[in-house]
Length: 112
Image (tube, rainbow, N blue to C red; front, side):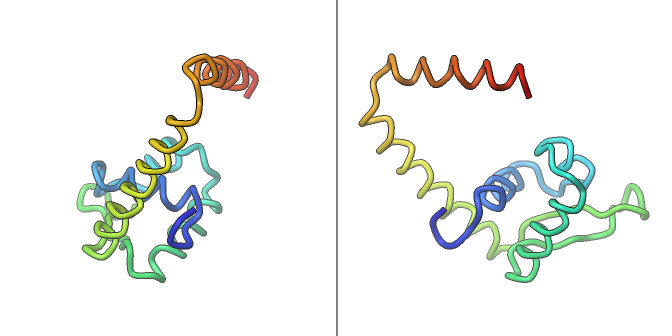
């Protein structure tokens, strides 16, 4: 991934652009990650000052995650880089190849 981020980190940041503040439990459900895996991702991004954890005003026993201003800027930058990459990929593959990939992804999804 560009800028030294993992795919999971980039996806999480992209999600938070439109869905923050977000409770940790929701992030676990949305991304299908183990609690320990999500905690590791959150720790890395928090260490880079890209997100912050705040006690939920609705449930003082849980935390909500939101991007910092720096995190928002980085997330948008990652989004634009990813869009360009996707556009470049789409220029090199045919509609048939895209349909085959979708079909394969659906088959894999049923198994998983």
